Length: 455
Ligand SMILES: Cc1ncc(COP(=O)(O)O)c(C=O)c1O
Image (cartoon, rainbow, N blue to C red):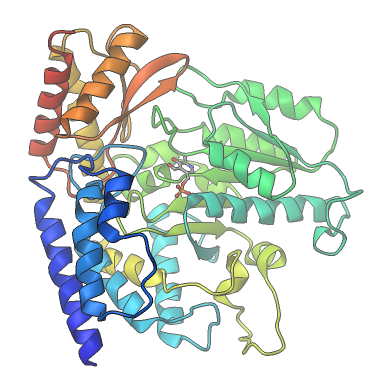
């Protein structure tokens, strides 16, 4: 016990030092990979060390090389922070060290996973009775939903992919908006389905239903999957779910929704309209480590028909203890896994329904404040309709925009990355952290103003 106690005490202290440093430290890391490597030391020691000393060395060597991702002024990629209840629960996940693949072997996690799954379906407005799998992130949630879809549409064509594989089977068509997230393509590669057929999008990156209609009617009766998006990574835009899903279902296609961050609009009464109709799809992918602010890594794969998911992911082992209700591992690609439902339960229990709505609305309010703040920054133009959490800004020419991004990152007050959207260089702002305050937005706008000065 002494070894646990001293090591955990040190970890607790370092964690609090880190969290309390977030408001004042630069968001960008202050040490290079080489510097951290040198501080850690490269040689594997012949002899062991005390765990508490190892934790001190790890924390001290790593500290300058940490990016302040949980800071309220980190707006890169789509990266949430960590809610205190989720973080504390995540520590217990490690201490409890449950392998949560088998339902009866870890009753505490199974109970929490059942309750959390029901809460999630309720908050996300998805059909009750859908299967909810806890995966590593939206990439694997896309993979999981699309695996269930691939197998189902092939089964509908009389082909048992689980037994026969893909070789010699019917081709599966996959239609997806031209501005899908790249992980959809990655998931399709894992599934042996190759590249999807891109469907034309509008000026906000939303799939055009007329283009989808004509693509669907051009094909014969091939097994088909349509992938829609809730939350474009640049504009935050949402595909037109009611029309697109009706068109896809009229052609017996499986519909999967990639809602890595956008599906959470459903939890807010004022933003629910953005995802209206998405509940008619067959599978959904979202993350808890983005909008819900649980620590990495936690994604959610949701499939309307639990049997379809189990057909794609289920397995049986003679040495395993099986439960007649099915196993948590029947809903995800891997067998062994950590207790991912514990932190999700903790944040939902701590926030409650109104707190989750408030979290989503706060992110959207800050994104709107960023967009409004651009009005008095010379040369800045917001390119997207800011309906959700994403803001894309140009500062005139691509060169000027790229220079602003460079200066901002060097300054370190806020962290926002550059990207290219619809053939223009942009500064991308993604508001995903529960901890962001009005003051963080003001400080970040000031940093942008400073970066623009003298251009
Ligand atoms: C729309 C969308 N889909 C999928 C992903 C991949 O998510 P993850 O990094 O959790 O695998 C992202 C990440 O930002 C995303 O925005």
